[in-house]
Image (tube, rainbow, N blue to C red; front, side):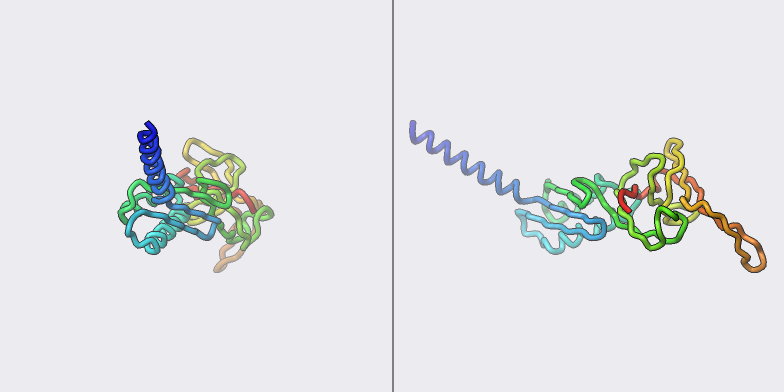
Length: 200
């Protein structure tokens, strides 16, 4: 009886050891602070870990700059990269300066259209999310204006109306013609929203 118990304990220890080894390996830890990405991979394979980590870093930066991507896009893309290196079923842990499973992005204000709230050249911290509400400041890609940072004025389904905080209107002569210069007022689709400003 004692031999059976000892044998059972040895088997359990053996299983626990391999389960623990597998658990701590085949993991990818990603940390984002808004500008930088850190990747650490533990894998039970002969993969070129340095190349793998570099590819994951590059992909993560692409996700940060792509309005249509989100945390699911990041996780799925990293898993595909791992699979291409022969690492199956990796545990992907994403952490950031704003919490787990979030994608922070630091962007810089260009222009004075968000005065007095935001200054030209000021950095703001963005949470990459399409969860927007009236009153939020967001970064978006506009077909008409390109990359913009504006306040959400109204929401109609998937259409988001964005406006400038700076309500001043000025006039300027350009080539003999008088032009009115004022803040932007435009509609964008929810898919064009890159994220919500959470700190400035």
